[in-house]
Length: 189
Image 1 (cartoon, one colour):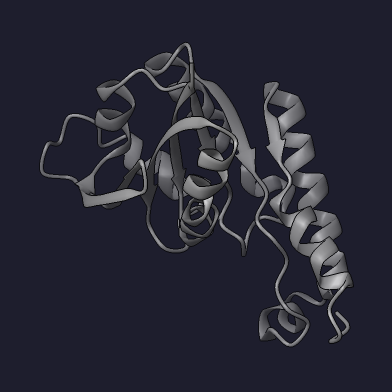
Image 2 (image 1 turned 45 degrees about the horizontal axis):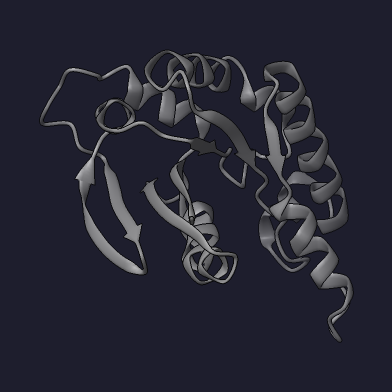
């Protein structure tokens, strides 16, 4: 018998990237997998929380919606609370916007409130937080922030770990995977 998993990703472009290849991976492992990705490009924990607070406004549908079921994708518009209530989720993932991911203080209080709302509306779901990855060394934002690519990675890794520990979440180490992959490239980061 195949194992069946229902995943809801509340994210941004990074969650789109993460969900893109999950179907063939899950299929190769014999997992019947369904993933719904709610995304707004560049969306931070603060903006996700602001959107949650508009619960009840049926016309407020700020999220792109992509449901991947058995490799078939359907799209639409939705909001977080209605989607959390719509089904019994096994896993819900969240993430910080990449540009704020290295700043520990940016996770609070908005991430705390978002986790509490997910636990209220999807009480049986296990919550994961997905690391984003650091910017390339030539990204102008690094110079503006006076950090380099490796420092951004170290800070975001620590921020995700700290937030996860505070809320008993599991970290999906995508940022670490990208950092390790970069070490193997002919171009040095």
